[in-house]
Image (cartoon, rainbow over all chains, first blue to last red; front, side, top):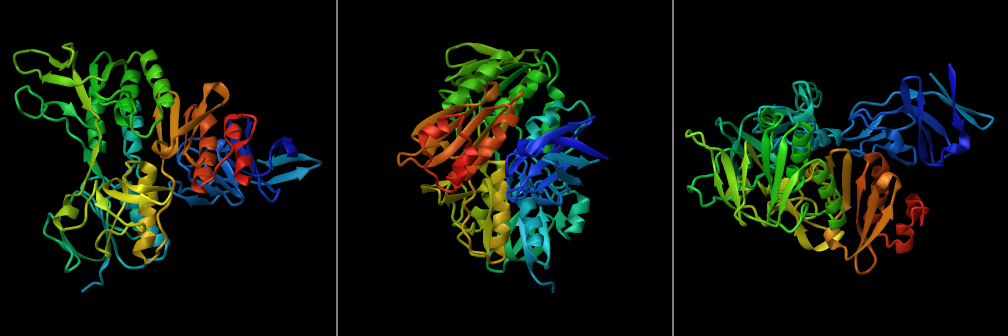
Length: 101
Length: 418
């Protein structure tokens, strides 16, 4: 099911937004190449929300301990994280971002 | 005979990260990770916080559990000290008599708590003084932090203050004694120290700052109570004493095999010791940092242990790049997080930026305008990203316009592109 997240321009380029839906939380990204991606909201190392992290290109860095993930694949890229993030399909239609849950 | 492999002495943060990185970088020979503790490599930061607070039986937060050690094919030797390094034959000798040959050796031996000096009491070491370094220490301390207990903490550094925060949350009465002129003397700007001190006072911590301990009286079988006497003659009765007055680099092995020492094991920019087959990383080593020239530094920080462990692994495989990661550390006390990126002491001018919810950032500029450190305090959600951007600015040697740093309407990330 596709769920509406926000307007496409509500996320800055190379930035991330927190999105809560029912009892779940996600991080929705806009990369430097203007592509949109979504992952689970919390870092897999300690429960810390990735929307507070820094997006560099297509990498999200958790601000707590600087673990890194590729936002496109969810792959863990740098210690201390070693468990990949779950990713979700994202589409942009008529200026609105949707996530498929 | 087996081909000599990579041997790592010390199975803490630096040693464990180095072991994994050696595999990640493609080393296919043997990796031996030797630790003195019985546990698989675990993270130390939770020892002063979650391990003391979690309502359930705590367990170590493992960096490498058995499964991961197997997956990376790391031979892990637990609970076994190394007794000697034979540099001529490139072997290490273990307490159980085993000898292991190395192609390259990494010393990640860490540091041990500085002991409270002998006081003019009865000339014996202070009985009952507790220190916090290992998971075992944390478990014992956890048992003692019971509601209503009077806890005296000697030393207002990170360990002392994090334990104070945990003890308050456990319902203890806490007194902190610090001989220095303020709390958090090392690496933290005075502005942040003041905010932390106020928060502790609001929680009920009794601070005795700028005063030394004259005598300690330990309870004995006559039913007397523990007490310590300060230089001004006041006495503090207590049930438990926790001492956090710094750490001493663990250099005894390095010293006994003749490696060069200076406030720790001396390493060059690649983290090699005075013996090119032996490297050192983490709390045990001192090094020169290209961003902070002119003096040797030694860091006791989780991130540095990680970064140096990782870097040492690449150096052991022949990489010559200098170690240049910007120092970074954090501390959680109550709901506050403080973070520092860079070395505050190298700054001569401080610029403050007010963030939402009372959080603050401080930018530390050197005489030539270079940003040498950024520090912050508040909710970690508010400060973490900003500190990270600040760290990148420090790394690139940026000289940002002071007005822009102080103006919360100027996005820090925009300065990265400037």
